[in-house]
Length: 402
Ligand code: COA
Image 1: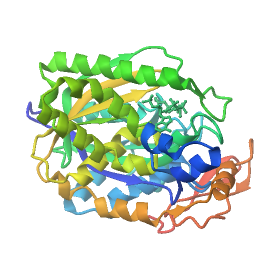
Image 2: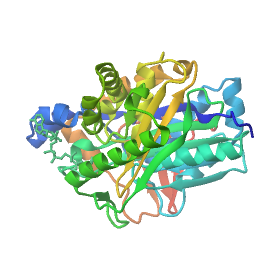
Image 3: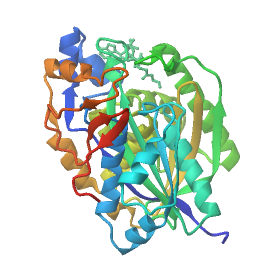
């Protein structure tokens, strides 16, 4: 293994379900000033998943985009996948990993490892960091990391305006074409009762004010540790991406640091933060994938940043674990980001009325159902869909029989 080997994100793709709710419509229906959602929490739209899009189906729809675009380098790297990591806090099974379904349905070679990781919204970063270490040990191999979640807090609940749904898929390899993952990272775990979901609960238990405080405390802790470990200042970062439960929260984490730094740095970081949360404003919280949706948003809106630009990455998962690390952009990364494909998904979404949203929200697979046909009542155009429960086993469509 060479000392100069770089490992990181080689490819990434994002999937959002085909329905959305305008936050202004939610505000009117709930008797809330629309400015609270637009400015107070910083959200414009919220993705809504139909029953056909559970977290495995969304993960499949994100990951297949990596296989669809395959050129020669892609194909070599896809053929070299030997580990599939599924990150989710809204997985479909307490025992079986979502990664097993993906490994079976996607065109991945036989004989791979696959498992699921969980620690609230931190799971995507856990997957990325594990994958990075794994590739350092196995330089010829590739890891597929998929972060997929359906963030539901319940109709008329305090967390309702911070819901969302979607998945991010990333290929981790050596000589990555998007970004190298830093060797240094600062992380922290503490038992905090800010957000959790006991196994018998449909929706999470949330202490909103505590979750805000914990997020900000973890940012301060890990960011200052990272600066200490690397002997850097905030001015060294071209941009900083944060986990985005709602876009205002990352801005709040950065604000005191921007007040304290030079004007040029403050202006740059503030501008790039807004670019980085542009898609999150339209999708809402997707838990494990939120930080990576934000990264995708930054890179899609800013395809020409200088090679080796350093992007700070703050990950937070309630309960709680936080981590600050950085990425160094690869030359030509802008050509690897499929901005148009994602923009098409966003614009093709159907806007739900509040009645349609509530109906769709309440559609559920009956508890303890052993056999159940999932009707496509809403005409979901997505390639992969949950079709049925057969003797307790989830069955997905695979129309092109890949
Ligand atoms: N115009 C502009 N801003 C307004 C407003 C208005 N009419 N009304 C309220 N606001 C602002 C508030 O001042 C507040 O801003 P601040 O945080 O800068 O003080 C913001 O909107 C939110 O108001 P708040 O009263 O805190 O809202 P809430 O009690 O409904 O809680 C959440 C908001 C996000 C905490 C809640 O939706 C939640 O619990 N979500 C799930 C948990 C979560 O996402 N936690 C994040 C960490 S992981």
